Image (cartoon, rainbow, N blue to C red):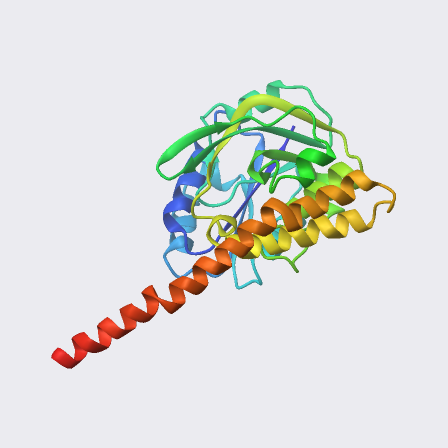
Length: 281
């Protein structure tokens, strides 16, 4: 089996180096590496060129570019266009394989499902947590959770991926939208492998640093999915309202209140302090 590893990057030279090194260090060579850089100015392009001096690795890099794009999902779609493997994996800059034998382990497995997903090692707040995904994916799990299965832990059959590109109208949750569509609407076959495939940076990603936008887009995806369901399906309708107006709604309201208080107190006082300090000088 040939795996298309797609890495997107924008001004994350340190993370990009880690990702490429983890690919190079694999003990199996049944892969192609596609790197889509969004026009970085931090030396990322130099790092790519430096690694391409390694002839053994360079023969696996079937495409790379550095050019402006509209965001992560346009970059991912560019990579999908160039992919020629049996399955594709989104391994973004900063993420890396759990160990050097991951690809060897994958090739030893026998599977033909549309989506095959593994566990991940999540890095957050200087801590490492092994996240084990469930074997069964159903509506309660997927609709009730954001990013139920992280896309860095999924192998997606290339025919499925090329017929379902990521929605560039979303900035954060297009992979979540794809996941809901694939599992709940198309009813794709899937399989969980109870092994760790990669380590994911869960702290610096856009979904972790822009929580309010993530919540808004997630609710929109869930709402669009539920409107396609029969209106008599009360279970899903109630699930949506619980999510939007219950627990999730209270969190959004509470966050807005905190931001308002911060603007009216702490931030205003900091400005007053700066003005007072300038007058003293």
